Length: 142
Image (cartoon, rainbow, N blue to C red):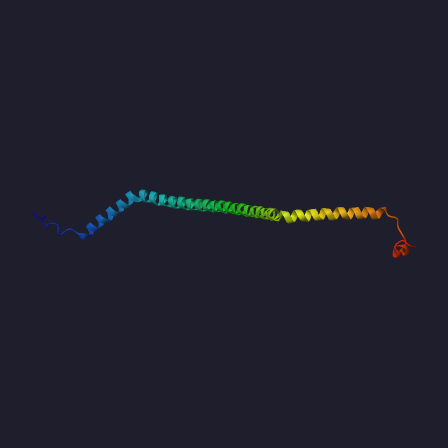
């Protein structure tokens, strides 16, 4: 059942020629597909680099937008802090005035009394006649 070895006299060169021809035929048959695959690989590399560039630009733009938004948030935060500090200072001043209202009222009353007395005395002084230095010294006797 084994195949007979009748072809022992066949030339090995002809076998090589046949294998070379088969390789050449295969190369000719697959050459267009190989070129198309190479072109597709080049195009996919170009598309990949274009996509990478677009992604980088998009990421840079996104980063700039996020950075700008963060700066605006920080500025708003600073404004809120400044406003709240002013409100706290006003509340503290108001509370101090309320806490010391009796002293404040007494001070205002004393100031108004002093102002009234000063204006009364200034008015009386303006109504008096002027005297010379000797008359003032002697109390009006001379």
